[in-house]
Amino acid sequence: MSYRDRLQQRLDETGRPLRVGLVGAGQMGRGFAAQLLRMPGITLSAVLDVQHDRAVEALTQAGITPTEADDTAAAVRVIEDGGSIALTSVDRLAGLPLDVVVEATGVPDVAVAVAVQALAAGISVATLTVEADVTVGRYLKQLAGQSEAIYSVCRGDEPVETKILVDYARDLNFEVICAGKGKNNPLDPYATPESLAERATQKQMNPKMLTSFVDGSKAMIEMASLANTTGLGVSKRGMHGPPSTVETLHETFALVKDGGIIEEAGVVDYCTGPVAPGVFVVIRTDDPYVHHEMTYLQMGDGPYFALYRPYHLASIEAPLTVYEMVLDKRPSLQSDHWTAEVGAQAKRALKAGERIDGIGGMTVRGLIDPAADFARDGLVPLGVLAGATLKHDVPVDHTLTYDDVQLDESSLIVRMRRIQDSMDQDPAAVPDLAGLVSLIAG
Image (tube, rainbow, N blue to C red; front, top):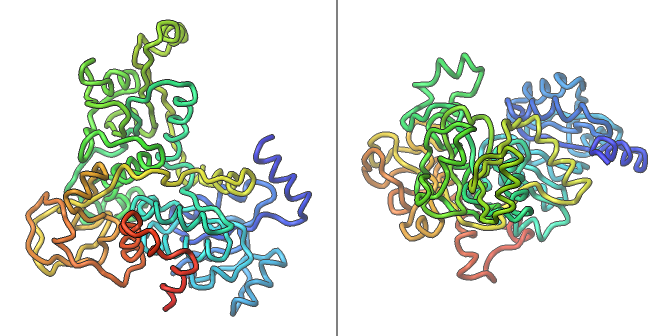
């Protein structure tokens, strides 16, 4: 039975629609809201954004007139009566009668705050901020296991859609050589919001978001997420990122001994060229008859073949995660492994005392690394660097370590990363969900 039919069936059985809250009413959040309400049995009960007008606009654009609610008790009554509200404070989230919260802020520190509040309140949470998951995804998964709710990264972005292809290949017992994505924008590792301001205006995009795509940070983050959910490794620090086409994926990402670029099977990477906006998995079979059948089915000459999905629909596909969590009781993507990290390289020479502006900013870009190498070299995660200051001068292209920076220790994601880093050394000292909530409050 389709999700559409199952949602209608749920509505018929329960007598009320599925109540969804949205945090973040920017481009991704509004795209999600517009698509979500095309399905039966669902309502957008609350939109939270620091700009009240944006929260209101997200609802009205979706055909909903929000009701004013001066306090949490009033907001609860509105939602239970079938209405919707626009709020500016995430602190009110936990008291609302919601089934699922979708986080779409793109700000890692806010994303983890929303996740912790929702899970503690027994509300399932789906995030579009993959940056948070590649920073503290191990800990978030552990916290979700202590809740009656589900935590997941959303469908529609490359990590989840590529994971589906990886699972498919593994279920057919193919050897996965490489999984990855096509990169839409030509790579410019020194791009900044200033240099891309005009392009961002033309595309009606946030300049920092566009910068995170162009400077390669998003590709690094997305492929780290893919590695951490599938257990695949990283091809090398920063990945190869060669040019390729759909027709030549199986040649480009073959093993080196067979003329490709991959040194060891079972890794993530990306390519430039007309593969974007699709995702792919390059597989191999040594079985003569399977090889023959794949060739007969016009999948190529073998023994390498490419499984390819020519699109990912970002926020338009994100509602699928809501359906999976509510109806199938499962996440779309969690960090079941920890094989990859995303560090940071300086875009220019940085001076002691300079403040780092985070992902898609003026100062640093993301760099994927095998998790073991990352830990060995004392590198610092990109996701905790917003608001950090340099302890000393560093040259352009320098990969930042913990010794290079003073982190903002008041930041929740920094505190959660500190906890995650201690999970293997002293598991008993790791705060559980209730303990973390108390730690935050106090």
